[in-house]
Length: 302
Image (tube, rainbow, N blue to C red; front, side, top):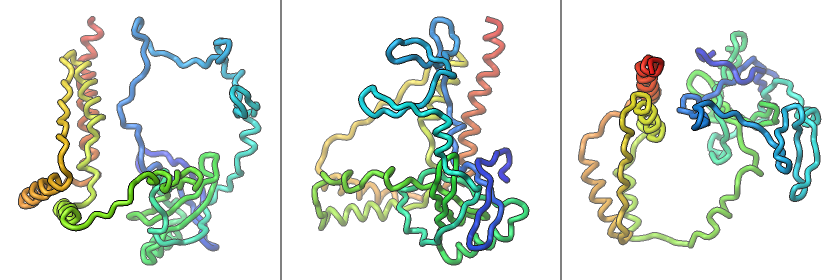
């Protein structure tokens, strides 16, 4: 069980006639992002959200609210929350594997949200047997179950000591790529232009390390909040350098020369992904909290 985390779902993972108790934990979260509340400028108090009738503009209390489906412009059929609950598929708390497929068979455009799938204390052997067999067979598993009141299709893959379970978008939820690209002209690049593009790619090859990708927006917000707390002048935005329009072939030639010069320089070793990301978040959070604690006595005094 991940330290400090609460399982999002608990149930059983079943493959063939074998089953074991498992739990799902959120693998990606936005809870550490800086968030703002809506404030009344005149009083400094937080603003509450109130639902009002679109015609009368009278406030509508929670007990008077229900669900509705629009069938025409401004015409609704009323559906009670009890009717919605009755339509939810019944959950048997079983994540049943329906098939094992090659990992490359699923286009990543269907990926929705990732979860860590871990075993309970009694099901470790069966869980490990499935994990190791999937690793050696180089396959992923397709499973279905009711998650968060909806029937979901889940792709399960080996990941370190455990498994990753990614919920998948349904086919009707994924927009057609043919429609997205239908207006693109049919172009076939050859000769020097293609060779230069391939050269640029070869000089920029690397490895994916999420620790090297900093969230500049989040860092800018942290600097802004810290400056406001300390009463300092606000950070000045950097000027955006606009590229001059140029010939594609000339730009490729220039880029190829720049890439060759950069490739001759020694590369800096990338930081560990987990440690680097944690350090960045911790540094931003500590800076804001430190500024807040120092400014708190001043606010009380004023």
